[in-house]
Structures are given as C-alpha cells and as structure tokens.
Image 1 (cartoon, rainbow, N blue to C red):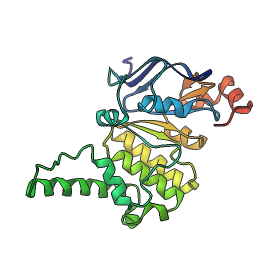
Image 2 (image 1 turned 90 degrees about the horizontal axis):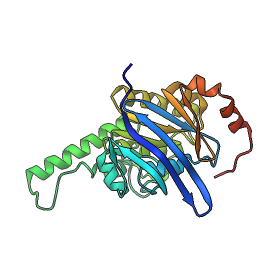
Image 3 (image 1 turned 120 degrees about the vertical axis):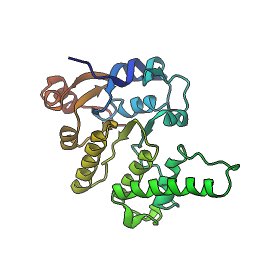
Image 4 (image 1 turned 90 degrees about the vertical axis):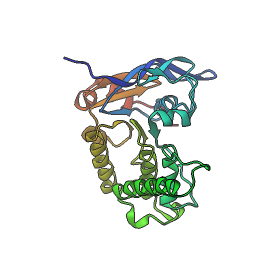
Length: 256
C-alpha cells in the first residue's frame, strides 16, 4: 500500500520555556488531503505546537518541514506565502473594520498590484481580489454581515470571519485552533460541513477542538498530546478506545 505524502512533518520537535517543556520530542506528520485532529487536555501543548508549525515560535530541538522543505528561520508571513494559514485560539480580527475589509487583508498575499501599476490593470486586479473575498464571505454564510464592523458581531460570527480570512490566503494547509469555541451546535455543525468541503476540494486541515463529536465526524485521524508528548495517533474510534487517552482526559491536568 502506498503511504500518503506528508505535507507537514515534525521530527523530534521540542519547545522549552525556561525550565518548562511545552512540547516534548514530537514526531508527527500531516498527510496531504487529510483532516488531522489534534486533541489533549488543557495545557497539553496543542497551541504551542501549532505556533511552532506556523513559525510564531521556533523549536528548541528537532525540525519542521513543509512540502519537504525546512521552515527554520521563516517568518509567519513568509510561511503564509508558502501555503500555511491559521486561526487563533482567541479571535484575532481588526475589530473596527468590516467583515469584507478583514477578509481582504487575507487576500493581500495574492495581490500583485503595486504603486507602479496604474489604470485598468490595477483596477482589474483589485476587482478580482474583492470578488474572491466576497465569495469566501458567502461560503461562510456571512453575506448579510459583509459591511458590518466585526466588533458588533457575535462571537460565533467573528469566528467564521477569522476562518474566511485564513482561507483568503488560498492555503495548502489550514491550521484551525479551536474554531468552534463559543459556537452553538448548529454553528459548529456548519464548520464541520465546511471542513468536509475543503477536504473534498483537496485542502489539508489540522483541527484543534474540544468538541469530541466534531472531531469524530470530521477527522480522518486524531493525534493526542499529553504533557507535550504524542501518546496516540490513529483513526478516531481507535483513539477514543485507547486507555492512555482516557487516562489523560480523566486525570487532573494543568489549565492554560
């Protein structure tokens, strides 16, 4: 059987903050075209690992490769240009700007216009970027809110704006850090359907979420972190049956 190509690889990755080890010798691959769930108790190191994958932090040991090339020394915006987009555990938007303007900020990486481009060519480019942003807003069910300031919107809607902005980069790999936090069941189901559509279109997704139902129904495989280490990685049903996983969730973990 052919082993699926791994779009992103973590090889012996560790991250320390002084005497605290947040990520400990993680070897993990995200296969092209899959939805990989990343779960674990609070304080397990999930967000730290995503920060390493997206170049917001540098590992203190090991190596991370994207599309076969090391990301060492990359800045987050450079990695975004190479095809990795992400959302954040805490919603991070331009609060006094409209939904459309927020999504357009994600399009700037694909925008080829410059000050030297004048006249029709620049206007065509701007119109194309705007149209792509509008399509993403419609895809996320935000059309009626397009010209509203995000500061006036509900938490669940703002989460969807953040996902739309990440998708505006047209990434190969989308890192979703608790995208359904604060959402109703109906809203989280819509996010699950969206992730399924993205996977069907060939996108690779890494999903961190505490919503067990969402993870079970959406993910091809699930990796479990506990105290910064991978303790299990398998199909969802196999992971939930793993005694080590049940122990990690039933035991007492640190918050954070």
